[in-house]
Image 1 (spheres, rainbow, N blue to C red):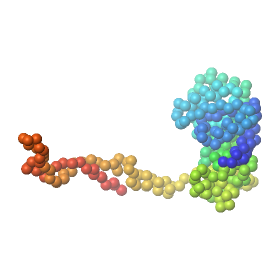
Image 2 (image 1 turned 180 degrees about the horizontal axis):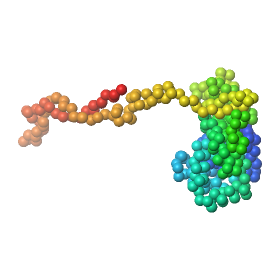
Image 3 (image 1 turned 120 degrees about the horizontal axis):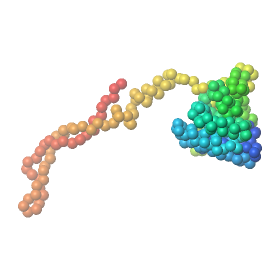
Image 4 (image 1 turned 90 degrees about the vertical axis):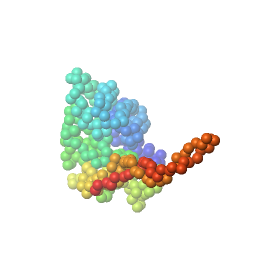
Length: 308
């Protein structure tokens, strides 16, 4: 990635979230190698003198949600929260299991230091949830903002509810400094924040851009708002029944060496051949006997035919 593109991403993130030296940025459950975890939660805040804190989790284990709540309780100065979308409902459900005194303590903490932003880092094909927005606003006293990005371009667009409601008029707006278009239901963007190519992957690099190498595909399914035509609506991935059947056919009906049906079954097979037993003479020589055997037993793998 060119240094100018990285600088443009950092500047865009600072403008988008309004980072300042008084902020404390808390990252909850973001993957360490994800673009938002590197740029939005570390590089951009540090560029303006803000403080950063982490609660990194490697997997979606049920008991690890308490590590997120522990981080929220300990980081009383946090003003901006980044959280992975797949952790949101787990965090909200765990709130009901907190002791009453801990819930009151968390409410007092929000009163003393309100949150400016609660940013839900959403993956492609993950549309906003109205129910989650309402419940989140009740507990955290701050409306969540769905944040869509990609490693190739950085910030793409955000969706913010009003009073917990996601209406047709409230849609995503493309990040500052990016131009966008929609091809076959997928978002393509152009701007100074784009990367140049994948390292040592020329074919993938060529597929990532259009013929003019002006726009880059993001992998995000979107549509255009009916309100004004200048806003973006995130869409879920479409369910392809025929594709699923084709995948099922190749996975479960095709040859799979790891499948127990395709492993060798060892059985006994008789093979006719002549074997001359050896004997030792009185003078110490080893010679074959005059009574050969013509049947012996060896082991050989036999494969079962797979049923269709």
